[in-house]
Length: 295
Image (cartoon, rainbow, N blue to C red):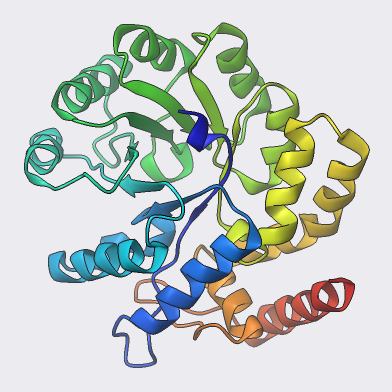
């Protein structure tokens, strides 16, 4: 899975002011990310607000991204949930021929035990015709997939090839990297510690901010992978304030404000999310102007 090393971006779903999907803006975002040098695209992740999309809207997003990408970069599809049978059924019926892997979140809301998490992903791995990336994000799921569970899955199923680790815990991430099978990838799901994770042995990041600043952020990760530490940290510290800002009032409200500041799409989000307030919008706009001057 060499195609998953580097920077992947979890694409937003742009909406018009009437909350309908803006497919032209989505094409612009795809092209902006590709032109900026990211390594792969993640479709229908959390950042895509997929919890608020209908079935038909999800299909529209998938097809729009496939067509805009036109085979240029590998695509990863977000496909998970807290109803194991439903996830398995979708894996058996969906056409996954355009994707190199699925990104499957640990079950949320149900708060399963570690054994329950293992059995869920066992069913996912058995059903999936393509490789599986586990996704651990305790801040959203209310349960932490422990390293022991991840390593058990990685060792038991050849098609479980990676984890997007978004617990925000460097010690936990280092435990994974120390004990993982040789070819298993540990991918940061947290923009702020993506570079430290890469330097500790991680394979890259699935990023939110990376789609707003693809050139700079993907270069930072490449510098980290090539152990050019001083140059990498210059970019890390340049973006650290903005990383805080885009998550300050929720994701993807912050990154959509970046896109509005760039003139790529509206900053519209669907309820229960709301757009960032005027103060934060102003700070993000000033940061975008600063980066544009440097570039």
